Amino acid sequence: MKLLVTGGAGYIGSVVSARLVEAGHEVVVLDDLSTGHDDAVPAGARFVRGTLRGSASEVLDGAGFDAVLHFAAKSLVGESVADPAKYWDGNVGESLALFDAMRRAGVGRIVFSSTAATYGEPESTPILETDPTRPTNPYGATKLAIDTILTEYARLYGFGAVSLRYFNVAGAYGAQGERHTVETHLIPNVLKVALGEKDAVNVFGTDYPTPDGTCVRDYVHVVDLARAHLLALDDTEAGAHRIYNLGSGSGYSVNEVVEVCRAVTGHPIPAEYGDRRAGDPAVLVASSEKINGALGWKPERDLNQMVADAWAFARR
Ligand code: UFG
Image (tube, rainbow, N blue to C red; front, top):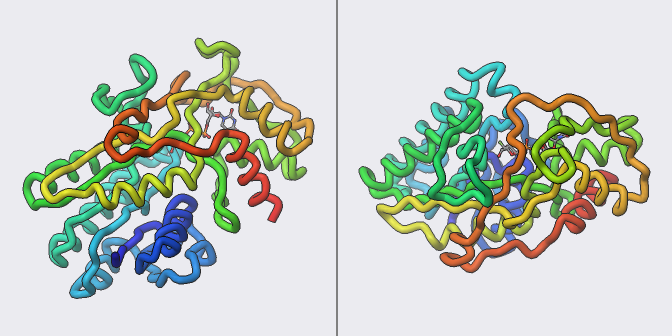
């Protein structure tokens, strides 16, 4: 297939692009490099630097694309609270421009990167796709708005859309991994301590209602996530919008993640215990029964593998 990957210079988009190229697809990456890196775009994919508003039409028009994988987004929860307008415009505004360009070009198949943040604080775990969506920050609210637009565009314009709601993505794929300018995620921050770039890891909150008092999250290897995107592409059906959670069904606490990082790196990784970080739910664990039943997807790589691959990437 001929595929447009928006945000294909970012962490997840670049790994999925690499796997798509390896599967024999023709891949064009559109990315404005606001947070991505052009050297993350895999060899074998064509790279166009631009925003969705500025360049999506030009790239899609008359070029015979079969589908779009839409990763391009602002994705920092904290920043979204500090500057919500940046998120409404950067996520919803830019996505609308992409969807308009798709309609004009007659491309209706899309796989969209949604998030666990659309659910907000869950009433029960594991979270099901039918659970209430009450995002607790603008980041989650903008992603939920895009999901709503896709539901409408499937009904009104015959889009065939699949939204994948990621839980905590980790790991790396060879030379492709997480390298954010501002790193907020747990595993890369813990590994910075093992690399000697930081003295200690800050653990945010020890008084959560969890077995050891630290937050519990559901971690998924980025390569397993990529496989879900390939399956989702084949699942797109004109007029339908399907939503699937991507998690493992089980969670690890912050303390447990730090312990795995110690075992993998052989570094003592000192921890400093501090206050809660604003907006963090105690437990986020996904039920992935739906995508398992529909597409046969289930995660194959465990937390050890995620940390080992992230560690190999961090040392490059
Ligand atoms: N944490 C620390 N210390 C750190 C970094 C994180 O203790 O230095 C804790 C956090 O408080 C949280 C857990 O580790 O309890 C995981 O934090 P991350 O920042 O790695 O991930 P989040 O669960 O906050 O975020 C992920 C995605 C977001 C998404 C969110 C909700 O990265 O995009 O899940 O679904 F919005």
